[in-house]
Structure formats: C-alpha cells, structure tokens
Length: 389
Image (cartoon, rainbow, N blue to C red; front, side):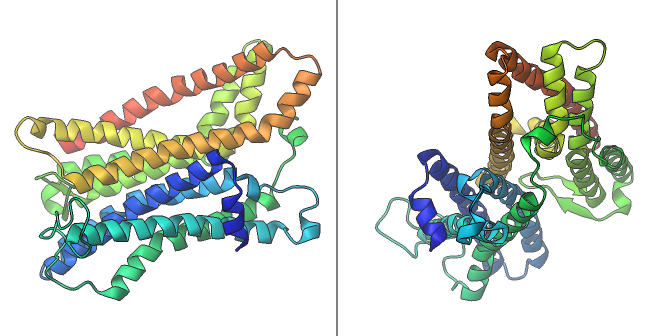
C-alpha cells in the first residue's frame, strides 16, 4: 500500500521511468508466452522450445538491470535524515523499492497476457484479434500454471534484485566529501575482465575452426547453425566487458589527470575515478551489446538481400536488449548527477565558474567515447570473424 501511494504521488518523470519498466516487462512477458505457445503447438519439438526459452534470457537480464537502475534513481528510495525515526530505515526502503518494482513489472506482465490472449483470438472486439492463431497455438488450451510461472519471472527477479541492490547501497552510502577526497583505489575487476574477454574470443575462434566436433545451436532468425562454443565464447566476452568496465573508467580518469592537468582535466579525471564503480558496469554492458549488434549486422547482412533474416520476435528481443541497456546507462548517469549535486553546489559557492564544471562534464563524456568506441569496434570485429568465416 505504501508503494502504491508513493507511485500515485511521484513526479511525472519518475512515473515515466516506471512505465518504461512496465513496457520492458511486457515485452519480456510476451516473448516468454510466445515460447510457451510454440511449445504447446509443437509438443514433439522439445529442444527447439528450450532454445527459444534460453534466448529469452538476454532480454530478461537487460530488463532486470533496467528495473534496478530505475529503483536506484527513485527519490522515494533515497536515504534521508530522519526517515529511520518514522520507520523508514534501510530495510524498509529496500522493501518499498522492491514493492514498487514488482508493481511496475506486474502491470507489464498483465499487459503482455492481454496482448497474447488477444492475438490468439481468446479476446475479441479489438483490431488484430486472432492475428497469430497458428503461431500461438490457439487450437490448444493454455496451461494456467505455466502462464502464471512465466509471468511471475520478471516481477520476482526484478524486485529481488532491487531489494538486494538498494540494501547494499544504503549500507555502503558514501558521503559527497568522501567521494571528493583523495583518489579512490582502482577497481579490482579490470585484469579479470580483460582475461575473460580474451578467453571468450579464443573460445569463439577455436569452436569455429572445429565446428563439426562440437554441438551446434541455431541462431535466432538465421538459417545457419552456429557451434555452441561460439555462443559460449560470446557470453564470456560480454561478461568480461561488463567486469572490466569499472576498471576501464578508472583508467580513463587516471589518463585524464596525467601530464600536467589543468583544473578542467583534474575535475573530470577525479570524477571518473570516483564514479567508476557506478557507471563502469553499465558502460561495459552497453559496449558488449553494441559489439553484439555490430557482429550480428555482419552476420545477417549477406542474407538481407535474398530473404528476411529474422522474424518479429527476434526483432522484439533485440530491441528490448538495446533499449534497456541504453536506458540503464542513462538512469545511472542521472543517479550519478544526483549524487554529485551537493559537491557541485559546494564548488559553485566557493567561486568555481559554472563554465568550468560544464567543460569538465563534456571532457568526461568525450574521454569515455574515445575509449569505449574503438574498444566496441575491435571486439565486434573479432567476435564476428568466426561467425562469418
């Protein structure tokens, strides 16, 4: 009830972010229900049904990450002085955030169910009713238990992740003064992330050269069969980029302060070093997603001139991953700006020109683009080579 009252009284921008979470949850829920429809309509094809379910994990992970980022930027979950006295301590705030996330995701799951039933022809009176009766196995009854389980996956996973993340944030909440003191220690994940990325690329190359000796998996919307080792290598590469992201951002901040830095470069470098743990992982995920899109472009481009290379469900899954990872990065950037607001106000009160602060922000953005753009292109080129050989 408290989460519902907070949702009703929230700022329109906060409500918009929650509606975006609901939309992403609706997309994932619809993909899961379509997988169920395929399994019902093809009971003898157990392996293809399982593979379709596995391909839904990427949109699911991206949606959960986005939901957690939105919960972190929600003003109602931000710790404030005096909240513990009225019963809103760290545990209660985490529970409230989990309830708000579950509410948004449940709304999306209900929308997904309505759209699914409408396309099956179970609900009539609206345009496009029964437009996908054959694809969604309209001639067979839906198992109620399976529908409930699939629709509960996103709300339960997102709410649990939000609660754990916010509980850890309130326990480790740094002050603005601590964030602006001596440079922070570099994150420990950079060597492991680089090693994991290298291992993933090596596994892809090895599996592509010995394709006949390894099990194969069909790519979504692609007629060819890819070795399972190639896809496993790509997963390792994506995890490596996400793990190395904070260390790369910290390194970028260190390089900005090298060789006689001025005030702008010093401010930009210190900010990147202090925010590396917060924005590094979403940046690494966006880098992995963008490199995957570039690799997929190289893979699907030859077939584009002859036949449609992928169907609407594949396009929906790819759009969900792209939209959610990008929106997560924007939400984290907003959270970072909110956390730095007291420090920015303190610098302005001490006479720092606003133009210098804007120049420092632009320098941070350009530095990150200069580092992550060629990295994304290089990883995409190396990842696409085994698939297009």
